[in-house]
Length: 340
Image 1 (cartoon, rainbow, N blue to C red):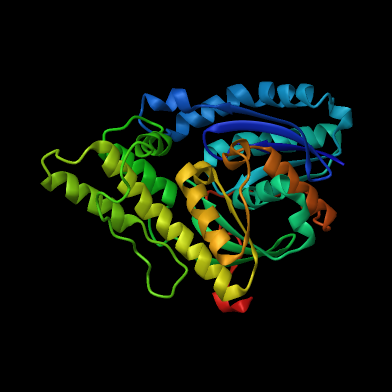
Image 2: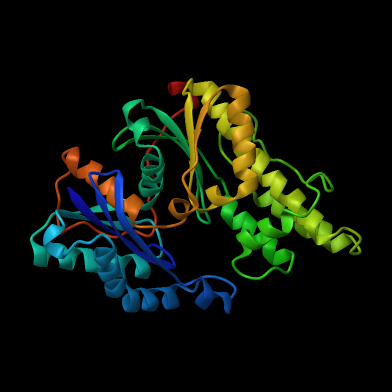
């Protein structure tokens, strides 16, 4: 089955064709990063207008790259939650219109479920040996989800304030770095000493939840009282280390509590090299299998949406043109870490 996926939840317009849920035939992404750089962050109205301009050319490019035409598409999947509402509506409207015109089934997909399926695209064999723990880290989300089966998710922990990507972006802004903040902070941190400044790690007792507002406040306070004696690279490296160490420690605790032996990381921050190194060291020490998708599957993309859509349809999801679009929605039901 060839599934055409559409993703427009934030500032990337993406379309992809995925066969049978695991074979990527194409994955086209049109980024708006340069456009939003002049504003220092994503402007929702600007993002929505750019999606309107880009959606049809991107879909056309995805079909061409897959050597497909519309007649070769068996179903459609489109991100309908969560995200910037105006941006989501562009992709959802395009997906529904195509499904209606082509008389093909279409399903709405949770954006974070898509990130989980980026792990399946990177390592399809894990689907035969579930459960798997997935640390989802992005600009808007930080949580640990246990995937027990297709469509079956338990939420083990989530951020109580800032997401990890948000903390990276805010830290970059405090350091005077340009947009996009997170990647620029990571590049600066590569040349710094991560042990120079002992920024706090909020572990929240035995909870698997996260909190990153404190480390952001600590950086602001440090900058307010110090006189420029600490090299910016050392500040960036120390700040990054504080965030990365909490992410790694929480995933380790979740694996120990549940007994799950396969862990993964997904979302835009999964592309952070320091996080990758920390998680690999942790997994080796704990004897865990770690899956890290390639960079092009970490950031927002439509291949992960198409993959999730295939398995939703295969699992009996009833396609419909009536599904709604939501700016917020939690993925998975809350579950204690001991419920493994």
